[in-house]
Image (cartoon, rainbow, N blue to C red):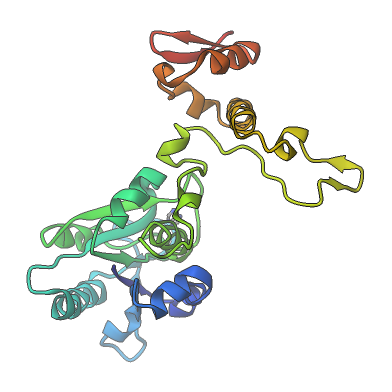
Length: 268
Ligand code: ADE
């Protein structure tokens, strides 16, 4: 997968040289280039921002350097991926669509992603309009809070997507049973333990030492349900009731959840 990131703080993306993502880059699974937006400015002060039209606080990123940067990124990518290649442009913004594991899976299927990191109040909207004439553009949000710019969101999105590329994570089974993975049926993952089995007077759950795979699986399933009910009732409400066993329903009933019209509902 090819990834281009345009930012005024290229150093912010340095963590993408570390760990599994760094290794994916050095082994060629991930071809990631970080570009400094200021390289596309034409004035002595390398200006990238200006006051918002219509007034208001903060500054807005001017369209000219962005348009030039995205043009050059597209040209360079086509030189390596072929004439017909188009990047999917992701624009981190608190006003974007929420980034999810499902979106990470969709993006992991694409050959080429480009990220436009806004700072200040954001990027002049016409940049996104013009880019949308060249290829898909998706504003994405990490969550309902405001960061100072898109760089932290790029770190999160690139890590979530790149670890899904075949060969990036050593053991592909570790991708199957994690929270938010389709295989966990929209539930959070159960708690995990390792040796020593007794630590500072705390015993790991005995079932995990039993070697009894079916009992371990049943325990983990129950813990997933309990944890999801406690921490993410919104996820439980989205579960398809047809996927619930009798044992699941008994646990949920104890926690105050009933099946109603194919969905789970918390009793008032
Ligand atoms: N830029 C500023 N806040 C953001 C957020 N919540 N998600 C993505 N990009 C952002």
